[in-house]
Length: 240
Ligand code: ADP
Ligand code: MG
Image (cartoon, rainbow, N blue to C red):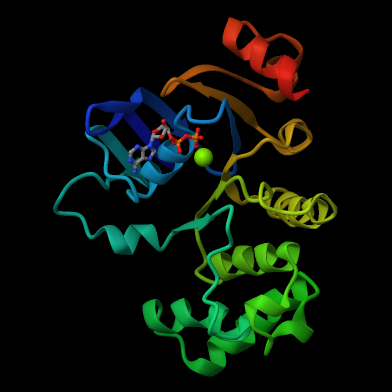
């Protein structure tokens, strides 16, 4: 679904990514872990070209999206992205937040978009919040809305950047449960997270990013029980 070839990203003279090559296959749940500042977010944001690479290529569903001739908006629609800080529109209701993009970008009618939004709200048990504003919701509710808002665009892959890091501890579970449900339903997912339990339970593969490189990757059981890279061992000793 996504193929990354020799991805480099520099901010001025600072090299955040130093040549990552990676493939994400349909239905995989790829979990990315690593120290703060190691390039995890930059890598994730490069996948949909929120960060244009300074070198290297990214293929999405067979198309080289780093090719300047490509209409990136069309491809980006198929890549849902969920951030640490929800990014809901504060002055729009929950229903409007969910229906905006499908109406504008997929030309859905208001009726179609709203009926789909209500289905998605039911999925997460938040139908009664349809006319509420984001400020009236808890962090866990806002993040679940952000996730279903992405789902309303019918993405082929979902990218998550520390979706539970800004949440109070008692709200982490409800967001992880929704993500696990998506994984079980076959959604292709790339997830940057510090939730090692999530990585173990639903990860198809775990990648360790350090100093802008994938230093190690393995199945969750291998990754956690038999780490090889010295920096990964040190990292795991701190987070486990
Ligand atoms: P992580 O998500 O692993 O914590 P990031 O990908 O956010 O790391 O950042 C990697 C490095 O790149 C950090 O040193 C960060 O300061 C730097 N960086 C990220 N974005 C920018 C930017 N827009 N301008 C300058 N430096 C940046
Ligand atoms: Mg980050």
